[in-house]
Amino acid sequence: MNSKSNDRKNFMMNCKEVMKKLSTKEELTFFQKMDLNIHILICRGCTRFKKQLQAINASVKDLISSEMKFEEIKVKKMEENIISKIQK
Amino acid sequence: MSNLHEMFSTDEFVEKIIRGDKEAQNLLVSEYTRQIYRASFGLGFKNEEADELVQRTWLTFFETVGRFEKRSHIRTFLFGILYFKAQELRRSNFKQFKMESIDGFMDEQFDDKGEWLNKPLAPDRFMESIQAIDNIKDCLEDIPLNYRMAFILKEIEEQDSKEICKILEVTDTNLGVLLFRAKNKLRTCLEKKHEFKK
Image 1 (cartoon, chains in turn purple, cyan):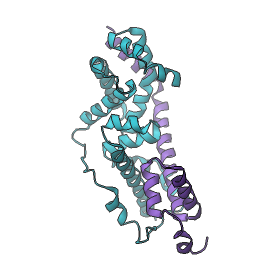
Image 2 (cartoon, helix red, strand yellow):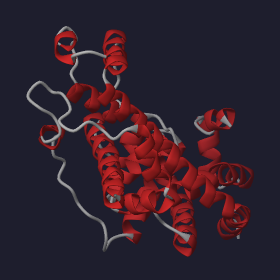
Image 3 (tube, each protein chain N blue to C red):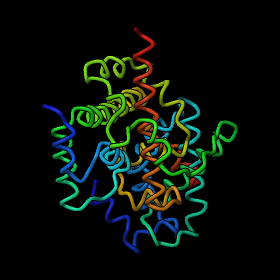
């Protein structure tokens, strides 16, 4: 994409606002969502930022699932343990 | 699973739990133990500590469910207890952060027009950093418990924001701040790890 500043002035959101909205996951109106998506489309920095957030989520999910896989047997035992404790 | 989740929110079911109905208890425990376990890992507890946390959470739940006011879902109540117990277990390490606004934190990263001063790392470089599993573990360790709880409930457990606000006892604005700080601490930490490699 060519020089950004001329195109960008027409849009409501700048990078700072995009970053904030992507991070806080606040609810957006239809038009805000559109603005957000258009900005990300044309902005390399924000595209990267969004991908980074997605990568972080995926990575943390993977980390936790691999830890969980390891402990699968424990979950069943834990359940039985709890039940026996509260139902004695 | 969502059918069970809905059934659990009915007054009938909650009454059963309060009365100590064994079948209801079995159902509840078998449905949510995995989630609490997973959340415990997400919060950074391992092995015996995670087991301890899960147990304490459930025991406290059944001890106090008589006081449950039914103003939220029963799972919200459960996770609220998990959060409380997690804080207990981490009392010495629990870092309190002031609920500052986001803006000060952001000013250093953006210019006057609100554009990136230093663009985020290119995807392939960022991925290198994030795929080193130790990096993500280390970066998670630095996140205070409240930020971490917000992050895993929202992004990993994918719970509803309104429920998360009740679990953490914060407003939706505050939740936004917690999520913001968690994600950006993680992000900048991972970017820094990449720089050290060079």
